[in-house]
Image (tube, rainbow, N blue to C red):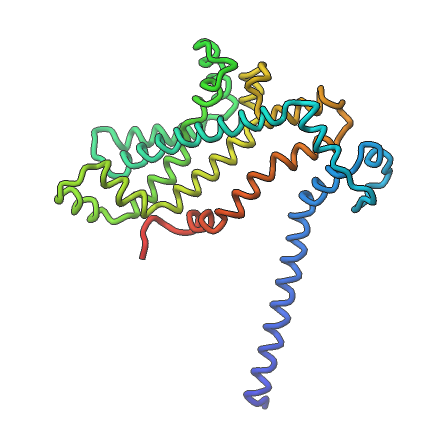
Length: 288
């Protein structure tokens, strides 16, 4: 029979093998995930001639250049598009947060006739294909004379049924006894919302905010559809303009340089708030 020491040594060996296999698989997966980012940056620092002379793509470049980045800002007004995107993202996200928080609170805590029916109808909107919503919004914005305006860009994006549902579920996880006690003390609904619910559910609200920022920053179809004035183009329109008008359809390095510049703010945002994003996704509304 094996001694206790031998059994323990065998168990440790199995654990080491298991850990090694897990780390190998995670490393492979990390390489697969990060390789497109590496290829994007590598392509952006290759010269146009060097890129087109590679019959077999190379995983390195012997002569990196920053010319593509200079071209991205000089051949098209990318800085102006960048500013437009910041304005669009900040205003849209701010209005969306106000609408989402107030709507979620109303459905979670307030008692009014038809609440459940209204919430069911609201959730049913998630079943409508986005293409139909885009067509309806386009007709509405056009008839209102809001094409080529920031209002036309922003208004269709200030609500999200999914975010209202997500935040409403978090609000409902906060014990209702807190709400009743606050009402006994004479606390108003808005005061309870801002002093109790929002601090408790802050991780979820931060997660919603960041997801909305990413959604706005990457928005392409609606800005492309509702604006044909370059004064209101976003960075996504800028990439397309580089492809179509700036340098010709074959200048991939210039396009990749623009994509790198546009991607940096989102990457920085994620690195700063990644812990809060994970907390908002993985935990409920109550704090233990």
